[in-house]
Structure formats: C-alpha cells, structure tokens
Amino acid sequence: MHSLVTRSKRHQAAVLALLLMGAALMCLPSVARAAAPPASFADLVAKVSPAVVNIRVEKTLKAPVRGMPFHRGSQPPGLGDPWEFFRRFFEGGPGGRPMPMPPLKQKAVGSGVIVDPAGYVLTNNHVVAGADKVTVHLKDGRTIPAEIKGLDPKTDLALLKLKKKGTYPALPLGDSDQLRVGDWVLAVGNPFGLENTVTAGIVSAKGRVIGAGPYDDFIQTDASINPGNSGGPLINLKGEVVGINTAIVAQAQGIGFAIPINLARKVMEQLKAHGRVVRGWLGIYIQPVTKELAGKFGLKKPHGALVADVVAGGPAEKAGIKRGDIITAFDGQAVKDSHELPRMVAHTKVGKEVKVRLLRQGKPLTVTVKIGELKQEASAGAGAPSGQPRWGLELQELTPDLAHSLGLESRRGVVITRVLPDSPAAQAGLRRGDVILEADHHQVKGIAELRSVLSKVKKGGSVLLLVRRGKNTLFVVMKSPA
Image (cartoon, rainbow, N blue to C red; front, side):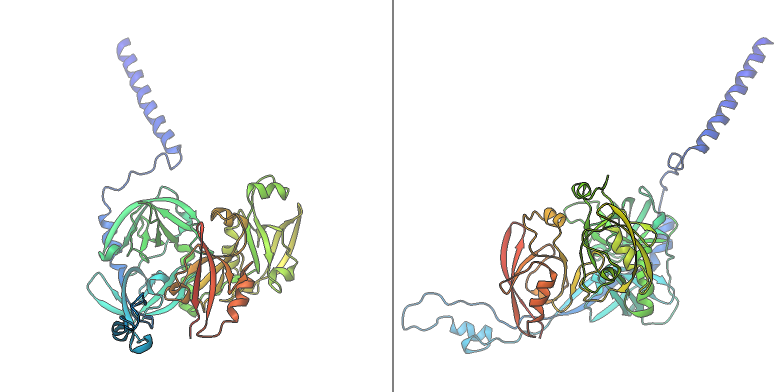
C-alpha cells in the first residue's frame, strides 16, 4: 500500500513538473520559442510569384562622333602620310573629318512587382531610367507595354503603369518597421535573366548606410540577390512586400540590400499622384558627430548632427541656425546620428513650421524652422548631395570624416556621390567616389566654386577637371551637352 501511494505521489509530482515547465516555456520571450523554419516555401511562392514581373528595357545610347584613332608615326621623308587611306575610310575623309556614327541600341532586364490591381508596378530607377521602350512580362506569359509614371533617383525607385487595362495580380505592402533581424524573407526576381527565381534567407541587418544616396536606410539580407534582381520584391512569410531589392556587394556573397517598403510607399504615392517627389529642405550641410568631435563640443557621447555650413537665405539661416550647432531633435523626434536627419527633413511637408532642438556651445536651444522645398538643383538639403543634372553629377561637400574614409589628407575638393548613366560625366569617365580638386585651373574648395565654373561653360563647350581617384590624380575633360 505504501509503495502504491509513493508511486502515485511521484506520478503526480512528475505531471506537475511538466505542467510547470510548459507554463515556463510559454512565459519565455518569443525569440526563445520561435517557430522552426517552414519545411517548404512552395505555398508562399505560388501565392506571390504571379505578381512579380520581368521588365525589359530598350535604350538609345549616343555614339561618339569620331572614328578609330589612327596616329601619325615616323615615316621616311617625301612619302606623305601612310595612314591617310585608313583615315579616310574610318574617319570620313581627308584631314580626319569625323563621320557620324549611328546610335547604339542597348537592351537591359530587371524585375518589378505589381502593387496595385490597376497595373502599377514598383521597380528601381536604374532599371528604367533613360528607357525608350519598356515592356513587362508576366508569369502567365503575357507581354504588356508600360509607361513610366515617375522616377526618383535619390531613392532609386520608379513607378510604371501597364498600358493594357485590366485587373492584375498584386501583392499587399507590409510594414518594414516591424521586421526584426533574423526574420525569414524571400527575394523574387529575374537574376541574370532567369525568370521567376526565388531565394530564401533572413534579415541580416536594418538601417544600413552604404553610400548609395542621401536617404540610405537599407534592409540587409542574405537571401541571394544578383544582377537582374533589381526592382524585385523582398517578401515576408505573410506574402507581403517588405522591401524592394536594389543593391549587392560585388566583393562578397550573401550580402544584398533592399529599400524598406515604408520608404518606398511614400515615394510611390507621390510618383502616382504627381510624377515626382516633393521633399522638405532645411538648407544646411551636416556631418557625423564623431567621438573626437563630441569631446570638443562638450558631449558625453556622440549623438546628433553637426552643422558644417548653412546655406545663405535658406530656412535654417532664417531660423537662426549656425555653423557649429549640433541638432539633437527635429519636430519632436530625437536625432541619433547625421544619417537620420536627411530622411526626417525630406518627409516633412513643405511650409510646415517645426521645432528644432540643438546645442550651441554646450547650451540647449530650440528654434522654429519653416521647411522649404528641396529643388532639383538646390544647393543643399539636410546633408543631401547637390545636384548638377546638366552634367549628370551629384556632389557632396568633403567633410573631415568623408576625407578620412577616402584616405585623403586634405579637405580640398568635392566628392562625386552619383554619376547618371549616359551623362557628360559618365562619358568623361568620372566615377562615384572621385574627388574634384580643380575646374579649368580654378581650385575647388566646395560645391559653390565648382558650380560657378560650370555655369560659365557654354553649350557644346568643355571643362578641364583635376580629379583625385584613390591615391592618384588625373585630368578629365567633361564636355557640355549641346
């Protein structure tokens, strides 16, 4: 009897222990009891793939108006130029007169995602910029011409509209702010022209700044992204679009970047309504607050955005913001670092009056700023590069941190942050990361000096640039469009 009672009590104790263990597991954080990865993504892929499209683009490239370069060499006297026959054949006639070359046609492919049943397609700007013809291929075999509703180079987004009326399979947009590092995601697109390719991975990081533009805020993922994936969607396990795949690290495998859909949604709405994006403008140049700078400005730790310069007549100057101020909050939101402020300002409605909290010589101060509109050629945004659309350049002032990251001892010059395809800058061979030191033998201390020189170049003329590329310098002739 005693044995039976003892065994019964032991059994009850074991059951109680199991119940307590289950209750304890239920109380653990969600990360500790997260569901195992799905056995298959097949159902999810079947659900989302009809809305992922292949985008094919045709562009006309301007061919140079010149022939094959033959050079005179040494020759016996009295024999004339032995290259004259070839010069006439390739370059059009005696004296090396140039013979116009026919324009070249370029074809390219990319990806996109239908985000509206009416036929609106979200993709990358670099996929369709400069296109003469855009066609969209659906998974069901249909090929439909599309028009470009709007482009936004600053975020590398574009919105297309299918020309054939109908109801199309579309994917819902998720909330990229809710993504967590470690969440499962799928990348769907057409890498290397291979249509309907799916790769799986996780969110590797958020808020990545990779130097692609003034509003960098990328989702990093290890889901394979390759050339041709550009413009395709990053999908969560609910079948929602949480990002637009846009960039890769060429030197590494398993590192890709996507534009958060919350940013893309705001851009898309403006492109759909107006064909362009209207952004707020503060009128300052900013730089990061490093550990060394924080100490000099009396901060216990680095935070905020340091005002490196103020645009004359801009909203910031009118509000009393000065060089050397550290902006710590904008419109009620804390500014943790200099990368956050440009996005905050850009998303602010033009004309809105906002409170800007700052530190001036260690003392807190609050000013009210009426936000202006960032024009295409505005001299400065809140850290945004200055645009030179005529030349195909986007530029940024050379801050101490930027000079250090580029390995430069001097702060002289301006940095090229973007070169537009088929532009005078691209044809001259300029690259992102080049530092322009001189223009037509005038020293370039900042964007204002460079703009002054470029503004004097007549249409069809050219400008001589001295450029630092890495540890070397070189001269480049950039021709103005006629």
